[in-house]
Length: 205
Image 1 (cartoon, rainbow, N blue to C red):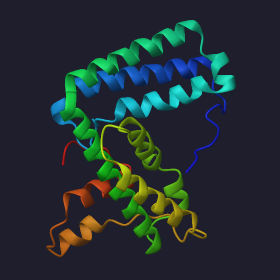
Image 2 (cartoon, one colour):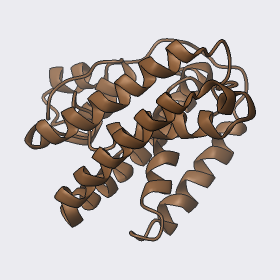
Image 3 (cartoon, helix red, strand yellow):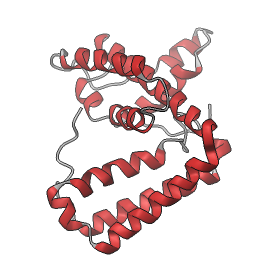
């Protein structure tokens, strides 16, 4: 599920923009705590989804040279703000992250099922950020929550994904509309997954 070299065309201005996104994610995650949801506009894991690529870039050879002392200082300041957010949120915040991890893993499974039915493409799955977000949350929660079962499931899903052949189509279906038209209740997670697959960002569902 690699998205390519993190150093592709990266310049200091790009890093400054990513740092701004990181700071914004921390601030919004704190301010909109009551509005957070797994697939909503505000998500508990948003700060980590911005922090971890920056850390990976910083630790890379060329990225190390691009991170000026001022940029490193800014990264440290924002990371300290994230630590405050973690302390304020306590166990409830970690539980929320674990809940989102479970939802993302189920959404990943659903995407693969859609592919097997010929309803979405392997290319679309490989470029979706969901799998990387799962990896980030697994790392964040390592040693704090029991993630062994989820890790094993994700590994098996990865094996299934690698076995896929040429994608059959690029379109993503709308099972929610079909089910709603037939009067069949649609689970919340399925509606959330549908929103994610179609690129929508809605409020809490």
